[in-house]
Length: 472
Ligand code: F6P
Image (cartoon, rainbow, N blue to C red):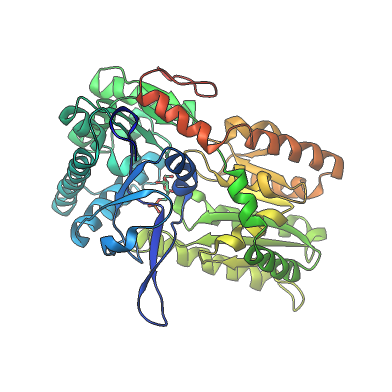
């Protein structure tokens, strides 16, 4: 690791590895962490020899692993050990059930949010954990180091670090969308102010899309009456890394298995966390409507949904997951025949299988209600081997870069999505090939190292570089 001015500290809740218990011997074993963050941050963190501070979690989102187990990957991993109760309040109650829901517009308003005594106690845990991360940054960072803080779980950390250590060059990056001032006003006033100031007073704040940066600016103006410094740097796909996985034996075996199940039919694919904002239910309802309105497609198409578990401790996610499973089963019951299973649902975390599906799709469905970027929309075209089409929500951050060559959908409009799936399946080979090469090009314009350089430039004060526009 470099010392002083070249030293680099990356700070995120989730680190590059997660743990699962080996059923044969009960021991924890490390595996690649789920979610887009590790793919986005990993290449830059490795290239720059960063120290990576992240919460020490275990086989589930709640279970801390022994610090000694975390020395993995090619980065200097610095575990921030958080006690399970504290972690639950900080991660589940505040980060996921509150901030995530607010930023993605997911409230079920007759019931939630509910800011009661239990919630306020969780808020104080959120503050404590953000403070704990800031303390660890203080310990880890040599004089003049650059500190890149990631995401809404650590919204208070940037300003604490900046206040405590004026010698450091601090910036943050928010991987989610940002909401409007009206939506943010559902949070208690002091919480909205603290979250906004926690980010805005901790150096430049980055987003994947100009619309989220503009929304953050609007909130800062409306709530704090000040001006934030924001910048825009859309994350990019690690094409080389993806191709390595695509060429692996595991991936090839999964591709052959999928090919066998699809048996020459057209293939629609989605790859997502089992996540409310990913809009998995409406994707299935659209497919159901497609089969109803297009009898010619019955028996001729398969929808493979690879939806790996996420935030499994939360009641909302458990209920959503149940709904997804039963809807998939209902569609199979309604339309399936002894020879044809219309939906192949894989609710497990199997990365080589996900990449195999991305290699094989005719249509990739990415229909989030709202998404910071959606890396799958870029990963798919980068590894797909069939000139597949992309049906893309206009509410995904990636829409700005990919929308020209995708079939756009309003994520709430099931009939529109059904129509778009049908049109995508009908496209001529010439049109498919032209769109697929434009998508590939757009998805490959930047690398994760370009993205990382944008973050470094923003933190080191020389302003964002090419492909990275200033928000204000
Ligand atoms: O999109 C925001 C984000 O925090 C990513 O950075 C991350 O990959 C994803 O959500 C998953 O979140 P979690 O770590 O809670 O599973």
